[in-house]
Length: 569
Image 1 (cartoon, rainbow, N blue to C red):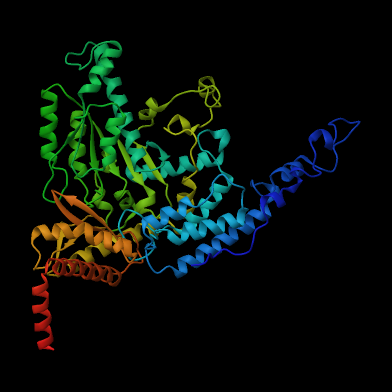
Image 2 (cartoon, rainbow, N blue to C red):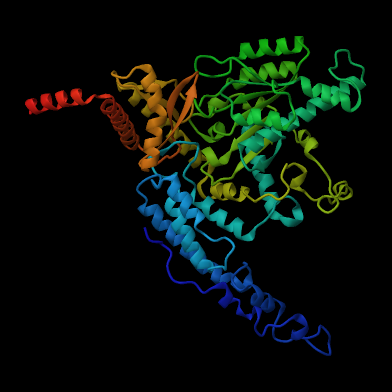
């Protein structure tokens, strides 16, 4: 396919030819004195001469607008023309294309580089808006959010300190208050993050530090049974006893966070689940008692509101009651299911979430935001205290104690430089309203229910469980295939379909059994679209089985089969 971007650009060297031309230096332009006033060449003109259209500013605004129009037009055409979720180019071919570009050579100019990126990246992209993309937790994105993305990228605000962001900080804080209120944290607080993995990491970091603080306080009070000694050794001792309780269906970022936080290898302890994959509250209570009896310390319980594979929600209210009675930090990973807070017909599924200590929500999943847009919310602003670190050049402590203290978001964030990703969500809410977004989430959940019912009526498909959200686990299992063959078909079908570019389906393993997975996050996808994908799965499965049959057939069997077929004809 030829590039959708056209016209030969003016090279940067041409646009910025005055680098070696008549712009001169400030000294050449004139002295900054009354006797020798500045010449007609202003400071902005001098900067323009140096950078041309390389950097965005007043001098390059027209070139920026023209370039953006070209890119937007090209992408709009691709969205119109795309007819498959993937390019079908094999990895070897793509690797060769990528390796063929010289990244140390002379620049080719803005438009030429964007035309090149269109042909390399956009032409070979994975398209999440296509109805045959049903693999991972990637969604089509809200139009106003995409426009806001362009705005925030161009202005390049960093929301770590107020003097770098001003109103952006205030807008993010207002959004945090809005989200906290919907969770049930009336006096809560939060921070936007790069995604659920970072949100979960910070939640568990806060849980760890608050447990250590509480244990130190108990020790200082001489409370019998405090699980800590004195000084730095006491911190190491207590770290070795900390436990995080969750289920086998929790996101892998919990185990990774435990490792990054320096906890022992056995720190993450699995709680039994019920038949649907939800945490068993009674098993949790019993496990907490066992850990306490053996000298361990429960640092946190992580409940999941929307498991990645099964799409189920743990019994939040029951878990909250257990955690409250034991004074244990309860974190809810609602990266997937957090959007249900605004879904009219499914909000009740998150009953009890407001009793948690902290909550993760990924707006780039079920709120249809471009990556990245996630938030960590806590029920009490003081829980962020362990994150606070003062630096004289950034957020000096003396200023923080003053009456005119600025609202520096770096006080609550693990990141320093941080994008104004909240603008995308803000713009979406103002453009479409939270209610409309919530209804779209109800639509994809309804679709998952319909697809599950459809599969249950197909004799050559198996279906696993029932999701609270929008995932469907299934596999091709024709009567002629034994269990081992059905297991082997799962990764093969996924790989063949993805390499062909016709459909993108995920796969996973539950209790040792492999399954194909549909993740439905496109409200424009219909049952007919998914039926077409299932037909591809069926046809691919039969094709693989037929190929295996031919490979195992001897020449004599093949001749006999051909003779029989010829006679029948």
